[in-house]
Every structure is written in C-alpha cells, then in structure tokens.
Length: 399
Ligand SMILES: Cc1cc2nc3c(=O)[nH]c(=O)nc-3n(C[C@H](O)[C@H](O)[C@H](O)COP(=O)(O)OP(=O)(O)OC[C@H]3O[C@@H](n4cnc5c(N)ncnc54)[C@H](O)[C@@H]3O)c2cc1C
Image 1 (cartoon, rainbow, N blue to C red):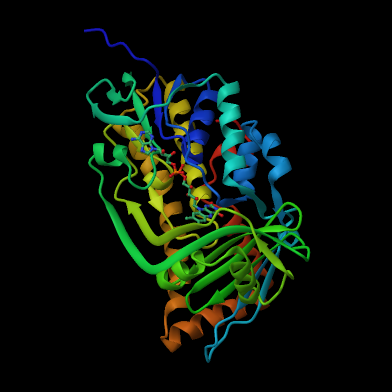
Image 2: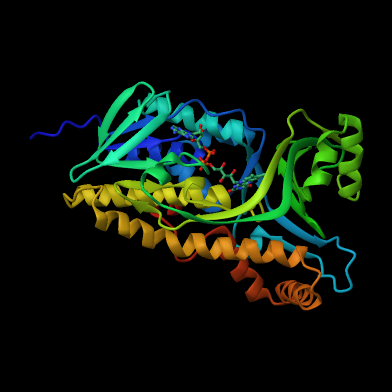
C-alpha cells in the first residue's frame, strides 16, 4: 500500500517554541506544516539569553526583533528579606565573561510577530485550526485537525502546558505546584535602568525588573496568591506607587502600563520528551517557574535540537520518526532540562523556607559567588550557555 504524506513534519502549536522549531526545520529544507491557531495576546516579556539570540540571528528572525529588544549587560541580586542570615548583594556583568550582553529582553508580542513574519517569508503552510487527535503507526502519523486531516512522519508537540500531543503519545508528567503566583506587567520609570536587571529576593519569592528599550522595564513579581490578587485589583496609580515602594525607588517614579498577567507557579517535566512519532518542545515538555529566565530558552534549545536530529536522519536516509531518532532527542534534552529545573526549584525553595541552615547555605553560596571570580564566571557562562547542550543553531551554525 502506498502512503501519501502531506508533509514530513507537522508542528502543533504556534507559540514561540513551535514557531522556532518550524522555522528551523523549514530552513533545513524539511517539508513542514504548522497546525496552529493564532497566538493569544501575551503581555509578558522574555529574557532571551545569548545562545537564543544567536539562534534567532542564524534563522533570520533577529533583525525584526532588534528595535524592540533591550540589552542585559548586568544582573544584580539583592537580598530584600528581613531574615537573620541575609545574602550579600551580587552583581554579574557580561563583560567579565567577554560578552557584550547576557542576552536581550523583548516583549513576547514583538518576538511572536517577528517569528510569524519569518514563517510567512519561508512560505510555511499553516492551518489555523487546532489539532483534535493523532494516531501513529509503523510508517507515519495521522492528525485530525479542525480543517481536515494530515499525514506526516513526525509531529512536534509545541502545544503548551496542557498538551494534546503529550497525551496522545501516552506521556505522563511529574508536577509540583508552589504556593506562589507571578504577577507580570510592564512599566515606565523616571531613572534609566543602565541595561541592568535587578532581582530583589523577598520571603515570598523574587521581584525582578528587567530592562526594556528606553526608560521602561518588565516586572515579574512572585508572591502569595492572596497578595497577588490584591495587587491586581488596584488602580493604576495605586499599583504604580506600590511597585515603586517594593522596588525601593531604585528606578524613581514608576507608571504601570496596561496589561497585567497572573501565573500560578508550578514545575512540571514530561516523563519522556518523545514517543510514538511525537517529540515535545517548549512547555509541552517542561514548565519551570519564571526565575532566572530559563523557560523559553530551554524551549528554543528543544526546537533547535529536534531540527538538527531530523536534518541528520534525512541525510542518513533514516525514518525521521523512528524510535532511535526520538530516543536520541530524549537523551540530548534530558540533562539540560533536569539541571535547570533543579536549580530553579532550589533557588525558589531556599527563598521560601524559614529553615535557618537553608538560608545560611543560600547566603554562603552567594557570598562565595561574589568573592570567587572563577566560580562566578563559570556560573555566568553556564547560565547563558550550557556547556553540554548547545545545539548548532545556538553556536551560529545552520542545522
Ligand atoms: C511570568 C513568566 C515570565 C517568563 N519569563 C521568561 C523569560 O524571561 N525567559 C524565558 O526563557 N522564559 C520565560 N518564561 C517562560 C516562557 O514564557 C514559556 O516557556 C513560553 O511562553 C512557552 O512557549 P511555548 O511555545 O512552549 O508555549 P505557549 O506559548 O503556551 O504556546 C502553545 C501554543 O499551542 C497552541 N495549542 C494548544 N493546543 C493546541 C492544539 N490542540 N492544536 C494546535 N495548537 C494548540 C496554543 O494556542 C498556543 O499558541 C516566563 C513564563 C512566565 C509564566
């Protein structure tokens, strides 16, 4: 029986992780179809670390991002807890590790617009309806979607934290919720941010200001759900004054912009990243709390890695959805995702705990990081670009 395919790969989901995976595949000459409704309005911003920026440059997406992106040259950590043992203030500067910037912060709406424009320029076919079901067999995968049916060899599940693809592949997750909520908004301020991201560590979680172009910044304020609900309900004027107070007036008078987001914090990792001709990328594979700007940076490395493995399998004339290709993907992503998830979890829990030795350990770690140059530089390098998991795109090479 002859098998007719609509494309080699279908990417399910048009968030940033799915768009990057689709663009990387199309750039590598892989016949790619997107099954992706238009992205929902998103007022968040993303701190893209240096490797992610290099990947976007390599894929021809970055020029459209440049006018909207702010450099992150310095990262400042301030212990704003009232605890007995407090950590010293630590300042990381990108030039210490020979970089112009750790990365760039950009509003998600601008990032998505730049990715969508690149997908259009590459003439990527896009179905605007959602995927409804999928079933794999020996030679391929049949996907039922709102506009019909598609037959492909591999699906990339980029359909977010409640992933249909993950469920269709029979993959479970390990999940833990935190008693915390992230309030997000963008704001204007009177004083320049000097390309510096400032993270105040408080008893309820980090309060982080990240530069945007001009005298603007984005805020991720992690706190208990009741306090978050209280802040969200405030008028613009009251909220602006409250945020300025929490920021210790570091950037002068603040004025919040329209668009407030509320995100309950959780950590969730898929038990496998690929199975049954389905490979998971982005939040379909892993959700990490918004601490240390890791989530989408991991998601972009997922997309770059699967594109690389598909291109390699094609060169060797191997079925791109074969179990060995999927197993390689799982192995290549596991250490990166797990190590970041553990680090973010530990940092977050060390802030929440009242357990004195844990506070002492956090204070001591930051003291050592502050005092020992090689340790600090190693930490910065690993934060920006993991030594073990840099796909080609993150090194400026095509897949
Ligand atoms: C407050 C906050 C701040 C953050 N800051 C940063 C940061 O500074 N740096 C960083 O790296 N990360 C950050 N993150 C993480 C980052 O936002 C996420 O990793 C990223 O948005 C996930 O992108 P995604 O494409 O995987 O998922 P999503 O953006 O959720 O996209 C999934 C898409 O799939 C679509 N979809 C769902 N079901 C179907 C279906 N059945 N068929 C077709 N399509 C479907 C949806 O419509 C959606 O468009 C932050 C997260 C939060 C909560």
